[in-house]
Length: 486
Image (cartoon, rainbow, N blue to C red; front, side, top):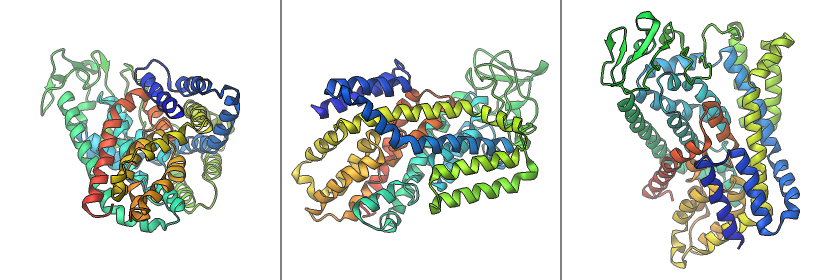
């Protein structure tokens, strides 16, 4: 019964948020509360929630102060050179923009923290997606999938968990997996190219200067039929459908983002007064650039070396960044206020997710579902337990936390494999396969940073991303089998 109710709870949650019948926060709280009562543990709901909140409180604190820290770094201009480089590569070609998103997300993922990756990627790429009316779920889907593949780095979490659970060396797990993971990352780049070509076909292609060039009278005019007129000059390379540029009657940004490294939007149409990374914003601190760069490098190094708990590192980093860059108390208050919405949204999601995970764990539904899946494996599949583990890692790491999967399920799978002569190393490597999908799980706090900053509905992100992320995971698994790694 627990197994059925567990799957029913997860299915109900996913259906309701994808159909936009409930907000993610409401669904994360009310649905598990209802199912807790159905299980017969309604009296223990408070205990389950408090335990879940206690487990996720450090993560919430880390995200809160990480958002403030990287928000300040964006304000002071630390990432402006990255934006300029990406813009020079992307120009206003939708295909290049999507590929650039994948490349940037993969590079920034080297720090091992998904929240950092999403904050930097969205800050750099959002202006272009918004300005050219590109699909924002393409950005969130590509960023999450690229980060998921890179999340398998030894300092990213899953590899360390697998090594700890099975008492193995993390290097022995990760190093042989590099070729398969490289194939997975290559597939993400190919996927980005395909999705980018789809966006190019939908929107057309123009140069960046044309994208920002105002028509006569300062208005970028869109015809109802397709071609975009910019002062009498049609787009080169194909027709663009309505929505490819600024809307009819909207004024375009003056100035060239190609030389400034930012894109400003002033059309006011569904842009929430968004102005991108304004190169003349008052928050810039060019004289402190190298201090901020050094502080960020030191912070990430300390995080990788685990000198202090990550929440503590970001708390100290945020306090130091605010104090040095904005000595005036009013300026500090203004910067905190500017990022308060993101902080509140993400912290709210995390604590709401604590209700979901608390009920799943406290009622025993997670354990019951995992045991059912393991028991459902046919005896004849014993010699192929590594492949079975890889396949199971997709749904299990999506519906469970990494801790629950690696410390609760993986040892059971390893024991089953050992009985048929399958090495624990193969089981451990196969367990990493599902990470591309895991990074879009509703139980991953970082994904709320991604969708929140990109102003994308979580249900829309899920509906678009899950199929591509699952396919990426299967590509990694297939590559591992072909290379003899799994």
